[in-house]
Structure formats: structure tokens, C-alpha cells
Length: 118
Image 1 (cartoon, rainbow, N blue to C red):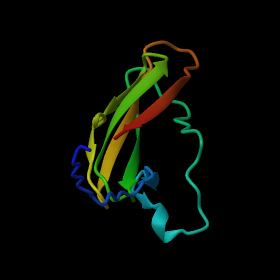
Image 2: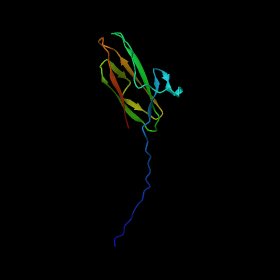
Image 3: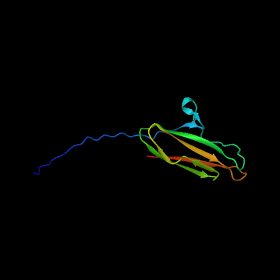
Image 4: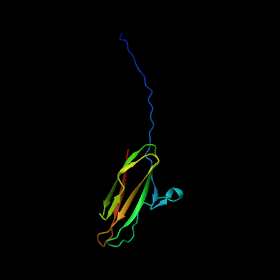
């Protein structure tokens, strides 16, 4: 018979769900309006050629882990973003600004995607 030795280790872990939410829109604190939900669309209305309009979104990380995010706009090139692509630490905020600056006298549409990575 061969002698065997074993070492045991207690294993523990916890699953953490990504918890990011829009907590502000154009300077309005949505947290203070418990019944108000962020819109699913941002309407820039009519903007004159040569002018621009900006909407800003405050993203909040309600989770316990830091996370990274990327911003992408699919569609009309007259929509751009700033302050995208970054890291939000636990209980911190990050602001993403979206600018609409039309280059032709026509309606424009795009999809804003905020992709969360761990």
C-alpha cells in the first residue's frame, strides 16, 4: 500500500451581477424622482445646420466591482459622443455626452450602444 497525503482548501466565492443604470439625464437627477424612468430614446428635435445639440447621460455603477464600458453609435455620422469608453468604479458615476450636429437638411437616426465589460 502506498501512503497518500491530502490537503484540503475551503473554496468560497460570490457572483456579482453587473448593476449599471442611467441616473441622470441632462443634469436632472433621476434618483430624486423615484417614479421617473429614463427614456428609451433621446430626441434632439430640430437643429439648424451649423449648430449642435447635446444630451448627457449619467451612468452609475451600483455593483461592488469596477467595470469598463465602451460607447458606440451605429447610424448617422451627425451623432457623436464624448467621455465614452472608460471605467466606473463601485458606487461611482460617469457622464457620457451625445452631440447631434447635422451636416445635411434631412432627418437623422442612430442607435447609441453602451457596452458593459467586467
